[in-house]
Structures are given as C-alpha cells and as structure tokens.
Length: 163
Image 1 (spheres, rainbow, N blue to C red):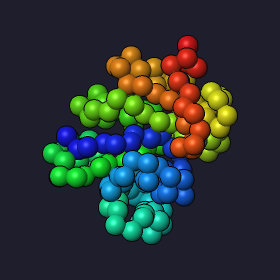
Image 2: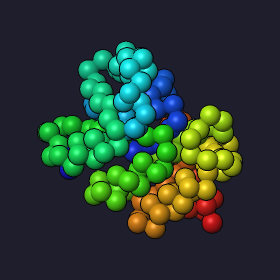
Image 3: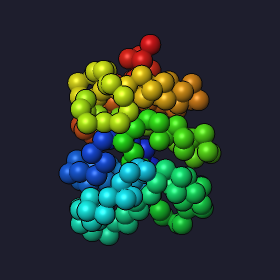
Image 4: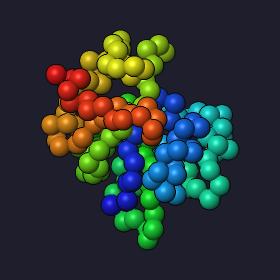
C-alpha cells in the first residue's frame, strides 16, 4: 500500500495553499489527484502539471486508476498527498481496500456541481445528502473526518456536524 500522508477533499484540488502549506507540513513528494472527469480535461491537467512544486511527482487518475495505484507497494521514502473533490470518491477507494485514518475537508462550493443540491455544513464547506451519506459511512468505518480549510486553522470534527 502506498504511504498516504494526507487525504483531502477540496473541490479546487491543487491550488496555492495545497502546493505550499500542506506540502510543507506533510513533506509529500507525490500528489495524486483522483477525479473521474479531470482525466479527460487535458487543459486543466496541463495547468496542474505546471503548478506542482519542483521535485514533486503529480499523478492524475480516475478513481479506479487511483485505487490500483494506491494499492501498490510504496517505494522507499514516498509520501503521497491524495486529493479528491468529494467524499464519494474516498468512500469508493476505501471500500476497494485503500486505507487512510483521516480525511481533511477543505472548501466545497455550492454552485456548479454534479453531486446534488448542497447545504452549508460550516464556513465554506457545503455537502449534498449523498456527500453527507458518504462522510457518515467513512466515519462509521473508523475514518476521522475534519474540516480544516488552512493548515493554520483548528480542525473541526465533522462527525458532530453530520448528526
């Protein structure tokens, strides 16, 4: 199994906060973006490739491809930052045997999403009923889920917000 040092839901996937603060905090040297639609968006993939920090490997996969990749043995000193846009992707990976004990949720916007009507959970984290169901399922499997927009913010336990 690959060494996942950070599992994060963030609708923007790769952006400045992730490329700087989260990378420094985790010492990740591989970024995995798991999103079924992104793989076919060559323009955005090219932008993300240009954004990745120097010396960092970037892998862009469908969720199923990410499952296969993450189930492989981790090379020595590899530290993977795993990013998806929604809880359903993490639930699919978990149900397929990918292991992580904590998922940090960043921002998820209200408009322009395919996951259903989203309602505000906290600050700028919005979730549809199906996303909340996926979060609850992950929590029931023993995965800690927190909202933490920036590394400097205190994490908020999502289990309490989802009751």
